[in-house]
Amino acid sequence: MSRPKKWRRVCCLPESNLFGPLNAVIDQEDLVLMQVDEYETIRLIDLQGFTQEECAEQMHIARTTVQRIYNDARKNLAESLVNGKVLRIGGGDYELCEGLEKTCRCGGCNRHRWGGLSEADNKED
Image 1: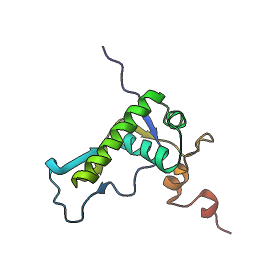
Image 2: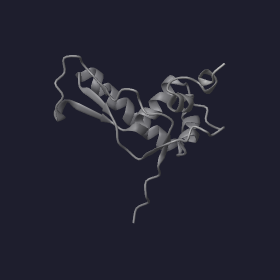
Image 3: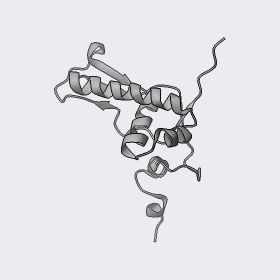
Image 4: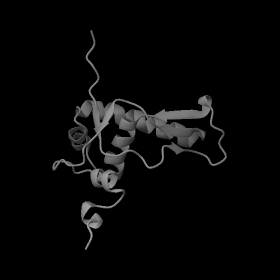
């Protein structure tokens, strides 16, 4: 019997989940699917500047798992960009973090809990 998949912690979902050429007709042959955990590794490593080890800690998974997910995500991005295919983000084994954890350093928790503003920005003067 195989081990059950471990849920990956994700701090926020993308504001848009469909990307590609402006004149693209969306059909299954020209659609690249990126899972939410793949999106999260791209966001943490490439945008936030996390190392793979820091990303693994943030997502509560092994560094080797992050490396595999990150490689899959980069392959999907390349497929979409180079071949002009539509990229859709969705699905996968993930759970959204609560946004209340003091150990979260990704910057996404406040954004997905407070609609783009930090908690301090949301308080009324």
